[in-house]
Length: 234
Image (cartoon, rainbow, N blue to C red):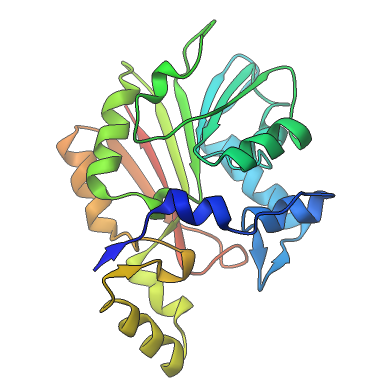
């Protein structure tokens, strides 16, 4: 079994012109039962990022897989500069149209490429964010991303990671469990758009091997009862 081409998936996923905030949330899957999450819940997610990355007005932040910028925009009021990229062209177009500020630089780019070469920096970032996207990568990809960050010290916050130990909270009926197990026999498999279910031990093995510190916490149930947040530091 292998996971499908995620670039193809996101190029077609909920692809429509956004007219309002609800459309922006729907466009990138910030929904519960296909309904945009509540403003208070979204603010909790933003506050959690600010707190864990210890963001302040002198910080330069790089955001991987920024989508249409719905997370980027509120963070831009906190930090000095944000460099944000995504490999999906229509999401970056949406970000530039709906989520732009003078201290945000958006571009098309792939986290599996030389992403540090995507921008001209006044000051290079030392804080990094990947929101709801690690499911679309494999362990060797994460190792490569961390190595390419290549800073003497950094904070890297990876949120909304599908947690293998919690997957039965998502596939929570006999029918859904059967559906999941059947998907695993397929040659190509999107896992319902969730992507790879990461094991906690996989993360710890990677960070241990790279000599990095890691803190792993389950997301609040109100946000998700099957995802975890990962803070990697050096």
